[in-house]
Length: 355
Image (cartoon, rainbow, N blue to C red):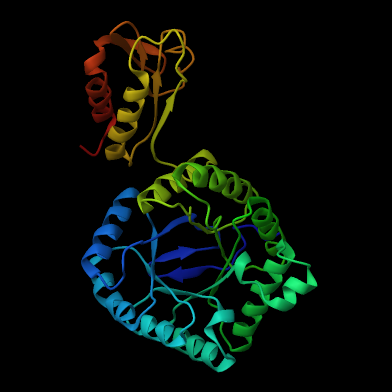
């Protein structure tokens, strides 16, 4: 199997994927691309959340032309998502897209695909060849008796070969399915057959809750096998949720370092503080310290406090209307419940060498 250390290196704007480079997080705007102000505002919020690459829909020529101004105001690579009209892909490249996403199967004739490839070659822009389980060709559906992992892979590699035969190999492959187990199998299969970098995601995963679970299982298994160079968590909700979920998946797998990790215990009958509220407020507060690499524990009682969370850099353990503040398992001081959040922030500030 070709793991991410051996995949081809591809440049997307000023970022590189493949070849053992860090796995990058991608999201997609849900604004109208033609609305430059709204799209830029959303991208800047996504940048702040940790998004590395952003994709926008380009369904009209007006959207393609808006890319030039959008790109001028943002700081991360911009990907144009194209369906059906090859002229939109050509215009997107001319207006500064750092990568284009197409499904050659719905772009039209070979001449139209060639026009896109020639323009990408002229500007040195990579093409992401995307195939979803819902877009399989009729002959593959008949060959495999329905939608299968094997059919998805064959469809993607057929399209890759078509572009290669046009003299271009600056490619990224994306194969997606909303069926988690099918998606995992497809990535395992394609990882044995190509060295192109892979953009990985579970498509149409669902709402924030169900989509996070499906994406965490699917992406977790795929990434843990060494497969995948960029990821997108597809959620029906605020795209910022996609980025924060993707970051947590990568951190959990040890594929991304940095940022404050918050661990908290489940509540039980021993809990005497509002632990649920405190844990959520801590999680929101620590985002300002995303450059630190520390673990913060929020524990409900002294039983689950300094002892069980002694590996944490900082933590609190609840009492009756108060809590113990501890560092590496050693108690620092006792703090009233209403001051616990501020006390934790003060300790994080002491660890922050940039201030």
